Picture 1 (spheres, rainbow, N blue to C red):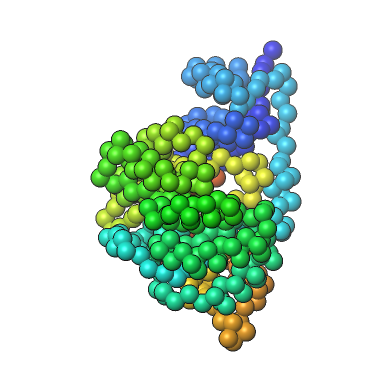
Picture 2: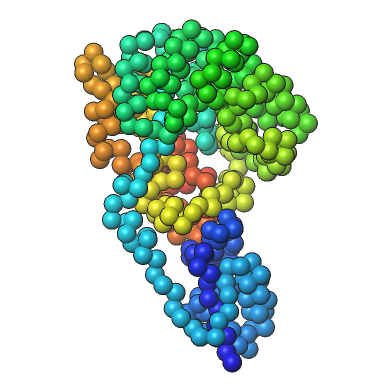
Length: 403
């Protein structure tokens, strides 16, 4: 009796110019199927029997066995067409209604004594790195009113960033204390920083407010042992308030990233690990799928990615001079807060049409990605491509010219 191949219910296919991706939501995995096997797979899923296909090409049996062993397909005695995904059709109607208010970055004034040579460079995922602000003066009225407005909307995460914020502990304490009082215990509050200037008193203060730190660690020109030692030294004074480790390196050193991340993950198993990659003229092209952390989302997010950007959606940033951006690194001004002129954050936030230009910047709108089978699993940083001159492209993707 003939057998027929059936894609598992917890899997979805995405076709592209060089093959097909199988997304396995149950096991959080993604598999790439080369073009030739991809064509055979489509024939099998459209009703060609396994016996018929294997009689033409004996290698097909090995491919089918691999799919079954990986739990992405099963064999059945009768062929039934795959049901269309109704979820995706429903979500397409009003994708903006599915967006959670996830992140807001607030830049604080201040100074920095580090004088890092790469400060302000173009970065992938640079929003989690410290940066020197253009204003040093602290305006208490501005920040307290801003935080009062933001608190109304219920953002899940609030990030404070600037230069070296722990050199200005008096106003930092005021801001953090007021923020926690306004947002309550459900909102996560983070400070993006270098941990070297945190006193014992400040540590206790942060712990009492449940404020977590995102600590940057430079990885270029260092051995694995040196990186782990630096992390250990930085974290000795902040155990219990560490939110994430941000590994920072040049994009040309990306081949070392997986090994570094693996070592850090073993040493600090319960800590979130982020990354920021510096890019400069002459840097290598980047294979996002092979080199970068992968997005293996749930089925709902999988469909929403067509219409909603996986990073920008639910994200805003407010600069020290009142400018509201889609994210800290994507410097397209959505609006400018000026309380003296009665121009408020709420007025800007309620201009949903302007905000949705970025939140609903789905992967399908990126020219490089819309016909690529990897598009539902790759990391993406629209800010990088904006800084490189074209927000509609994935400018440094190594697969850009394929197909």
